[in-house]
Structures are given as structure tokens and as C-alpha cells.
Length: 242
Ligand SMILES: [Zn+2]
Image (tube, helix red, strand yellow):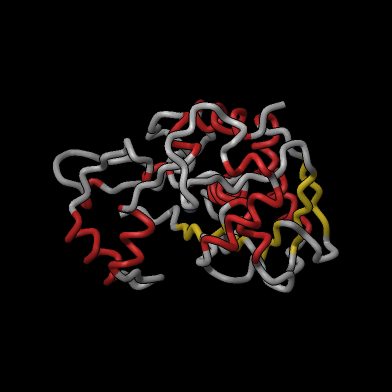
């Protein structure tokens, strides 16, 4: 079982507060800027940054120069496909705040980062710089920070999970075990947002977790995707048009 990409995508628990933060940042998050939205509700909105803006990205715990450069290089791979500028700072005041000393890899989804107290990180990059998938994990977490959800939770994904085995596996593993509720939320629940409306399911997306054959019914697996896929690029161009 590969655990190379073990990521926790975090969303602010109070949906009304998250909605307000998203709309204050970018009124288009309400969906009024698009003509093709399905029936809207407060749950169905996006958490995108204001298009064209500069995102300040702070390093909270002073990783060394090489480590920092590797993060910047990996994150910057998104830049050709978005209309945002990244400004990496050391002054601790960032829209996105990165911590590197914990072991987990996690990010707030898009503008939910605005709701985190300024002393706390909005993204954890616990992966060590010498890890073979360091770059992949950094790109993946930045995908979330830009507002992208998990591709394996796309409503068209229809992954033939062997659910009892999946629960067992995550409950019993040594590192970062997950409850059934966490598995439901991180693997099984599907979403219904801009991602799903505009782009089809893509098993090559860098936002897809690897899926082990042992955890599915029949012969079905997804290896770790190490590159920003064509669909990832298309989605980002749609979300942040130049
Ligand atoms: Zn993730």
C-alpha cells in the first residue's frame, strides 16, 4: 500500500463563516459570475482567491534556504496556469502560512485560510526535502491552497472502493490512523462545486490520491500522479483566467 501521498484537506467547519470569507475575498465565489451553475445553495460555492491578486506566502518556522527554495520551485509550477502572483516572505504575515516541522501534509482549502488565526499555519508540509515525492506533495498541497478539491472525490470518480477494507486499513495503520468518519470525509464523500461542473473526472490529476488495488473491488488502482495533468492545467486556467 502506497502512503506516499497522505494528505489532509481541511475546510473551515462553520460553513456560514467560510462562505462570508470567500465572498468578501472574491464575489464571484457565489457563482453569480457564471451562467452555467446548477441550483445554488450556501454549500455550493467556491473558495477562490480574487483573480489577479498577489498571494503572500509566509514560512512560519524558518526552513533552511535549500528547503525553502525547493518549496518555492514546486509551488511555482502552478504559476503558468493561474492569474495570481506568489510573493514568498519571511515576516510571518502571509495569506498562506507554511509550517514544515510537523509530520503531516495538509492545507486549508482556498480562502478558508483567511479564517485561521494569523499565528497559525494554513499549510503543513511535513514531507522532508529528500523524500522522492517532495515536489509532488508540495504541488498537491498548493493545489488545495488555490481552491482545488481531491480528484478522487469528484462526483464522476465512481471508485469501486472495498469500503470495509478501507476502514480497516486506515483504522489500523501506525502513522496517522483515521476513524471511519474521517475516511468517509477524505475518501468517499463526493463534492459538487465548480471543479465538477467545469471539468470531467481525471484519474491522472495531481489532486488524486493514489488508490491501492488491495482497497478496491476488482482490478482497479491509481498510481501516484507526479505531474500537474492537462486537466489540472485546464481547471486552473478556468478558475484564474488571465
Ligand atoms: Zn490533498
